[in-house]
Image 1 (cartoon, rainbow, N blue to C red):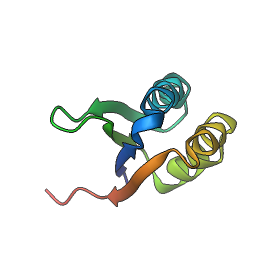
Image 2 (cartoon, rainbow, N blue to C red):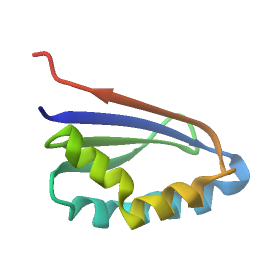
Image 3 (cartoon, rainbow, N blue to C red):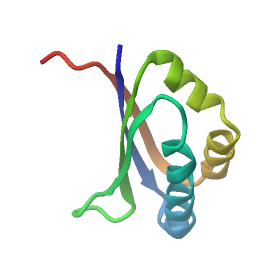
Image 4 (spheres, one colour):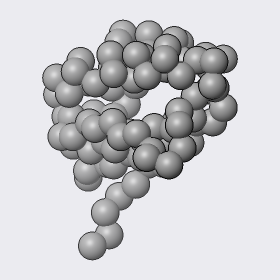
Length: 95
């Protein structure tokens, strides 16, 4: 079953540049992963420092493998202490 992820990231004001760089750095290696169908980063037009990832994974296993990759682990560690908010929603399509 395909899994979709919507992750909302709100950077602390003093870390916006570093968070933006980390977000951009994780995109290409993630897109190269087996099972990655879509991996897009969006920036909120109305709220500075707010970003949204929209991801599609071929399966739960593909998403779990992504979360274990070296580049994702490095990415997650690089965000520690730099966020106001992190909300991750895992979704399945109903219609």
